[in-house]
Length: 300
Image 1 (cartoon, one colour):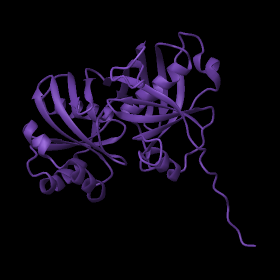
Image 2 (image 1 turned 180 degrees about the horizontal axis):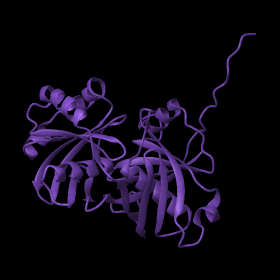
Image 3 (image 1 turned 135 degrees about the vertical axis):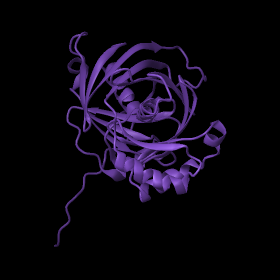
């Protein structure tokens, strides 16, 4: 099976483009995403897209289209991923032979628009490894954010035990669920035991992406993230968007802010709808074993 690998700030995804991609077995996802025994990734973008470069491209003015399912590294499905959408959009744009494109992606959370532009085909990458030679800029429209006061109350009651030093917390959806906890300063953010807190939330609250943040000023925020179905990651695009919306709703930041994550700095604009802006990097084309087809058992 042919896949491509891409990443945004080290948050990496494998992409499969097929004209009619059937659901993917969870065990195959776990094995393929395993960083020791498989290829390694935070998730897989499993997309139905028109067959062949010509069908995918259309005219240069036409948007590219795909329907996607997102599988986290643990084999479970998720609604949407900001960085994953950027990776899928870059894969579609490259397959169509374009340097830029508008990409419309159907997800279970609704259609999302991604603009891919400024693709750069470098002779060598910055680290000299030979990977990361194709880089693009992506603007991902994530639609409107929303909150749930009841979930915020339940989560904050649990965080009173898990993260007593938090200043406040809030649940947010940008098509997928997030819990944002505001800490006092960078020292508190770095000292937080993120992995056990995130893991406890998955079982004692609900499966949720957990972002711990501190405000630097009205235009910049620092963030660490535990992603459901994956664990601690270097970046989370939808998490950055959720954080920007939540903090703006609390009156702490402006409408356009930078989110500083361990992997890099994303820009989020919430002037009207929520838009995430990130660089996306093509890593490699890879081949993986086909998922095993389940066989029906029977007595003889």
